[in-house]
Image 1 (cartoon, rainbow, N blue to C red):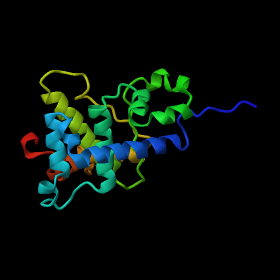
Image 2 (image 1 turned 90 degrees about the vertical axis):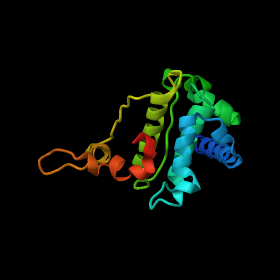
Image 3 (image 1 turned 135 degrees about the vertical axis):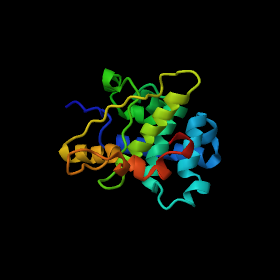
Image 4 (image 1 turned 45 degrees about the horizontal axis):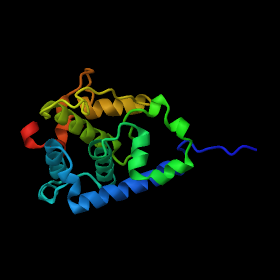
Length: 200
């Protein structure tokens, strides 16, 4: 009976996530993380996570959100991974021996692809907001266009409830007349967390 090869399911992504998190936290604690990122990213991370700001704000990213933001930025900006295979090679190459590499070489894995696994209610939308701001500001202000950042985004919702939540977060809650008030959006209500004053 043939043995089924692992296509990157079950425990493999969890092992990868643990290895990535360990590398990220080591780089962050040593200061290497900030040294290897772009100036805009450095400014954002200091604003989001630096004690000078977090100690004076009434609301901040919690540890899970912080880790998701750092892991994504590390994979994209420091590892500069061009594909899923590249991320595994850079972070945890021993896991590749447990996987079906022909499957991992398929087109759908041939571009940067990140997944944050977070429980319902733990603030995935806020993580997404931070990452959109990170991408947008880097795309807008980078000295030489690198094609690694974007000012255009497509958000896909798995159902109407999530779709409405995204509209509330980015456009503001719907008013009785059907219009949405941006002043009630998460971006505006929590701009003291999301956006450094110079970019508001």
